[in-house]
Image (cartoon, rainbow, N blue to C red; front, side, top):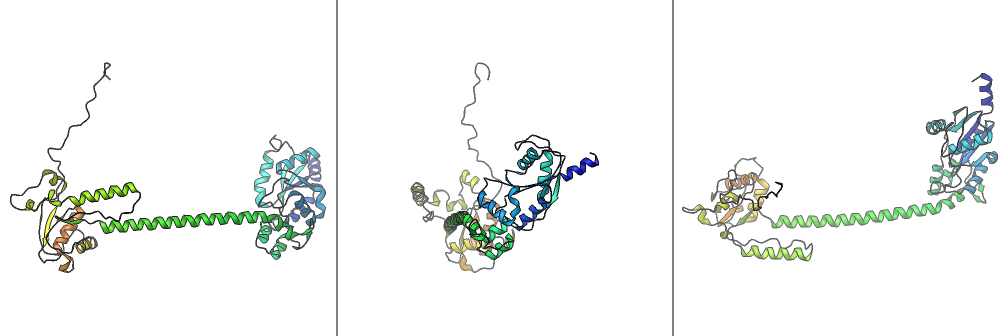
Length: 392
């Protein structure tokens, strides 16, 4: 470009600035002043946008903008975006000039490259083609957010400071502060109601979770109270009848199970003869009951509860050692009892308990690798597939 053409383009340059300006303030008027230094300048704002962040209707907003900067009226246009504003300038004044974009350093990183990208390119906004698109710096001296926050907190002093004019400045027949408050009120009420509903939902959810946790805690406590790892031989086995009634069907099933278990006696499965000369265990008992120990106390005490408590509380005190645990003899119990350790750890716990208090005991079957009984059915009940006529 020749020097004369460059000079003429600057001389005929146009400046644009676009925003919501809702509500407008002195920071906006400072940017408008920057734009006014160019021979052609326009301030664009959306005509249809209105909401929590855009409380003032277009006509009211225009009145506020004219009050803050009286000379803006002939330069104020209703547009949808920076790009539609640039298209309007191009249609009205042509493209033989530089388009200057007036905005702060943060927004210039978005809008200046964006406007350059569509310079000479048809788009949804229309078409424009300028000699160049450049940034005209402006500072962000205040924010519309600060004005809206001052109204929300009913603070006219903060409003005046953010607006740059007194809060009681008359605009459209009302003080500026009251005007903004009037149009913000519906959104503030809606926001408060939304927060109230949200808080109520959170409260109900917390109550539901608390009730659920309490129910789970109760079930866990009942399960802990009703389950033991050692039972007396020849005694009645009973399931804790305080299990919560999830529904009538489950409750009836539990009652039936309790009834069956009460009618069963341990001697039907295992007898004291098993550890006496000539006694023997069924192979199925041997396979499923390794480490099963029969024992009785020689001191005459009956303390099943204390034995369970001792085993659970002191089992890991000395690792896998059989070292006796320091506790009174009265923690043992009377008559023959049977322990059925399911795992190696439980087997160790039983042995440690027996080592703590002298007792008359003996293992019915030594613990070893599980062996499947010989009479176990090893033939599949499903017939072999017969191939069809095609061999498939």
